[in-house]
Image 1 (cartoon, rainbow, N blue to C red):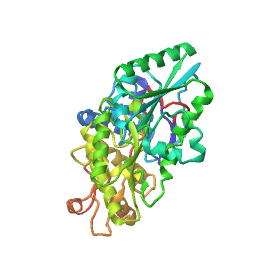
Image 2: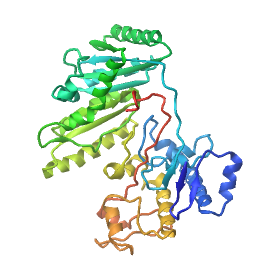
Image 3: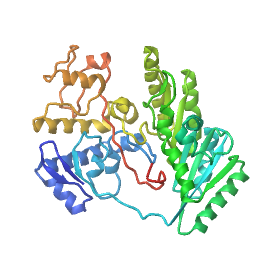
Image 4: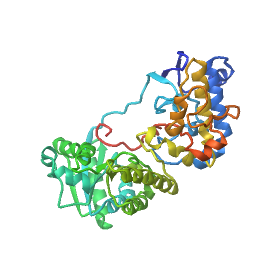
Length: 417
């Protein structure tokens, strides 16, 4: 990966041998300074990173400090990838590719509810599918109302509460079909799923995947002031905990007198959920924040990540303090400090890693004096922070999230939906 740093220097980031890494650490350059800082932060916060970072296949929240406590070549690109533009500008990247499959087929599993569907996940995964995508009743009902989508939905039997789209690859049609038959036999023996529709021909598969690709557009077509809003839309939890997590999530929304649309990647425990919120009403906006806070607590209870795919941005970065540390973003605050210092050394005067009220105060005044009479503290302790009087009076800064690309052992399906 080739990136441009805050002072304009282009550097190449790649896995380093032990000798190359030690050479970087000895360098007096800006690049060498960054290597020393990241290495030091990883060592200082190793225990907390091991304790607090979620062990899930999908996590975009926070910065990738956990990649630097592993027994693997040091690659600073792992910190930059998915950092949402807060660390460096990526100008060139080398990516991995995989061979196209010789044969592919789909099996559409029908369930009475999304909970019943995800309870079957562990059994389905035993047969090593390459994709396992969930669609809920809201998506299906809106699809039937769509002239374009409805004509593609002939593969649906009855009125399911949820569908699980399961895709298999193989070297021959017989191999793929054998795996589908074995999975169906297992699920029938456990009375999981009430119907199975196989999509063997390419045209049949295209119809199924087109309905899946339309999921977001379909739920956004809901008529009325309440719309499915993206503010807690991609939590990820361990797959074995997904049924209990989604059941609790539904109960949480019910307590707030709302429902949500559900679709996504059941194979990796990452489900896109968009609660119905009427943003025209102040009480509904307040409800959105309450739901977000409660979802964060629920995600932590199940050992998951608040952002499984889409990054944190403005919507969720304020949760990172709570997710990653009992203190003030301990594992990540050093990242905040050095990024801000390097930016200022290069002539910048913005604060790229602060969000919410703290960011607005920082951008409003560049002398350190906040409009509300609060001040930013010194950086001597290796942390950008607010003075104690500001801590009690307003929200703390959050660090923008990292779209962490973990090893993708299970694909989303056709074209990496």
